[in-house]
Image 1 (cartoon, one colour):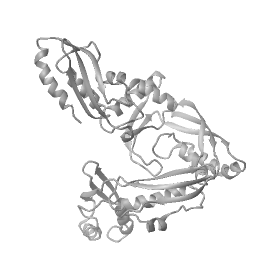
Image 2 (cartoon, rainbow, N blue to C red):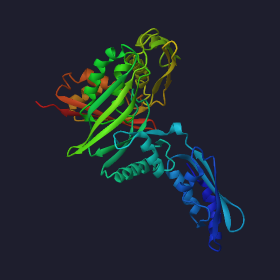
Image 3 (cartoon, rainbow, N blue to C red):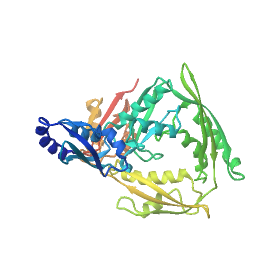
Image 4 (cartoon, rainbow, N blue to C red):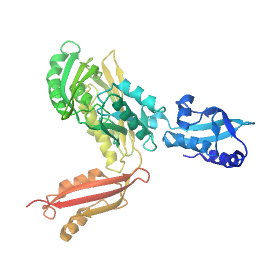
Length: 429
């Protein structure tokens, strides 16, 4: 990111400002989409008619860069006389490169109310943010204001949530930490073809029981209410099932906010798999898929089988240090024949390597045994599977039997290096 041209202009402009006063005739934004000129003006701090001082252009460019939503901002000045035109050439980060914003337990708002409320306070908000920049903090501040306007005093936080098999994308997760928000009851109705309710009701009842008396979550991370309620349908081929008619009833008490969730599940019809395709790679071949696939042409399209197949492909890459690997299964649905074809695709990302290994808590004798058994050396591709396999195979060996063990891996997304700390603690005798 840079605003080098703006700096050059400012250096030329500053001496002139000492002897003359200039104003802004208009501001021209180049390549500002998807953001509007009015939104960009608000964030830049510039406005037609505004008097310019020596750092006006520098500050405007910096305000835009500080959002984290632009790869480049270049600001320049043109024109004659005392009213000049400001040009801002922008390079916005594509929206699909931003992390989607996830709102875990903001039960006081519908999704549309959240989107509108945040955009009113964060003009460039389009449903996501970069990890760098001030947009995440601005979104949290907007949420705090929105809650205060409803008379809700709350402690909020946000963090970057790692991808998971259910939600295979980095997300910027916002949550209410205080008061506690819990799901205490689910009122579920059902709509589907004849016979579907008989097949699904036992699983749905179990899902409702598992969902209640837990922290409320309808964001993009973790196991959400939607995940739990749709799972019984998705696992038996109702791949177009969805939830609608959602409403929430809140009761605030000494122990936080208790939520009653009312929803209808629409099952659609049962689908079968017409094809499962994979373009072989050096890491994962067609034979590997034939061995590992839990879903085949002619099978009922069940989510568990698809999940296990995707996990097998991901596991092969993770074992070789591809910590950011993402495997997607793109469905092509044929509503006439009630079939679905899944195209599997991998985005492996870079290989992460082990930069350092720190082992604590072992006696000298146990450390010798560790060094003899440990196979992943500094400079090797990092594999969490290798760490877990080592612990599973060795923790009950005589040298380690009196220890409990845990580990923490810290990965740098820029250098693709991993620092691994393994901690052994004596077990109670």
